[in-house]
Image (tube, rainbow, N blue to C red; front, side, top):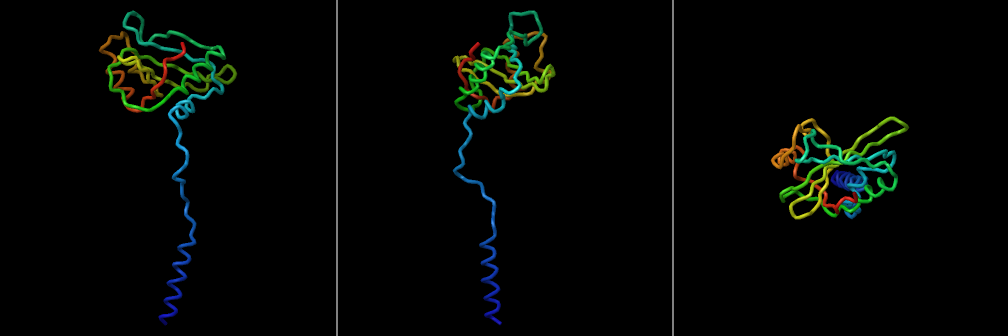
Length: 168
């Protein structure tokens, strides 16, 4: 009887050792910040990129439209700029300039998607960007330096990509 139990025990151990388990490789290549950012803003069907800037010297509603890029070489330059992301960080310095880019995706004459990228420049001249969703609280009747902190509270201070200065 003991030998039968021993055989059953060994058989169960053998079967449990043969059971396949899904594992993820620990040495899988990590996505770089540049790859992560660029993958969120593909070039396929990109129709235009609009730049919106918060400007305290204006009587217009904020942010105001500053530029629109339709030309292929301009859109390509902007997409390549996203690849300059070197790290993901938390904003800790005082912000001097703030705005966003609106990436408009179109098939035929139909807009099929919009993706938004906030950008800021800190007091030390470093540039940061962060994908976000537009909410009505980001549209202001007027903009002052005191408006920056509430805008950053909406956008969040974590997960900003460090980038070079934009090409335009």
